[in-house]
Length: 69
Image 1: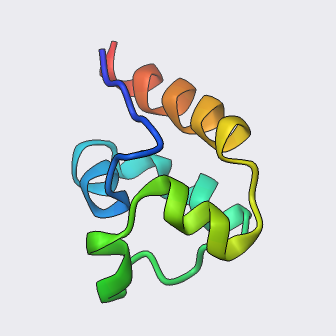
Image 2: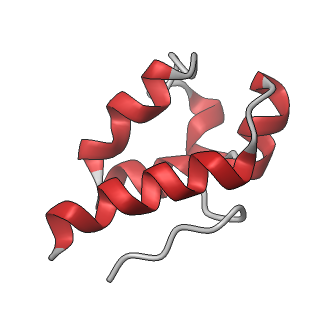
């Protein structure tokens, strides 16, 4: 099981669960390939984009684990 937390780096999420990218794109995180995403945590990105980290984590973890099962 994949467990993504608020401290997980977005670049790491995309490495282990690339199928989650549409979730990030749908909430306005369009620069997934930019250098910031390689070092930015989910919590940091949510603060910058005005997104509720708890809701995003629920979506991302659900999607990440759909494919991992």
